[in-house]
Image 1 (cartoon, rainbow, N blue to C red):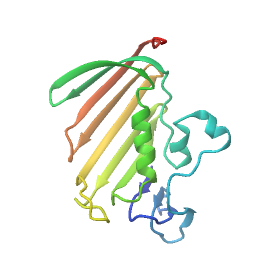
Image 2 (tube, one colour; image 1 turned 90 degrees about the vertical axis):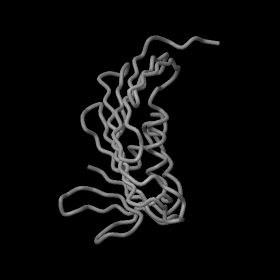
Image 3 (cartoon, helix red, strand yellow; image 1 turned 60 degrees about the vertical axis):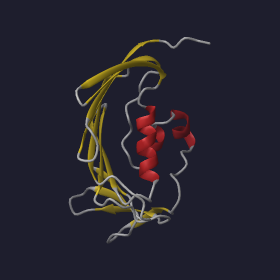
Image 4 (cartoon, rainbow, N blue to C red; image 1 turned 180 degrees about the vertical axis):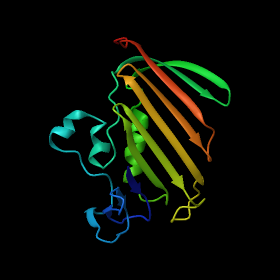
Length: 183
């Protein structure tokens, strides 16, 4: 399991390997750690990774690669608090989730941790844990733990389930239904 620990602003990122062999990334040094990135934004994706698109960034930052989804027209279904809603969209339906994880991993201002791990060949589990209701800068933060599980059997279907102590849980499912109309 790879952990990305988020803390105070403008500090470097340190790679730490625990006694259990798990690799963690933290904004503060740990025994035997090595600074892999100074403070600031996410590292630039270069070379062949730059051509792979949005999923290349998280893997480059130590986050498992998200499954690639086939862009096109998608039918989306969201179920939250017993209510289900359907809609259609064009593009890559999990791109915003992928970007959110990448941006959160690069952020150091919320005082929360994020752990992301591959749970299968086309599956990722992301856990956000905010132990306080205030960031190191004093900004309000939703205290609690949220676990998001993304499972995709193929590039044409996915399911995201969120369980949280801070937000209402939900299930989001998507199925590719064709190509987008050209304008």
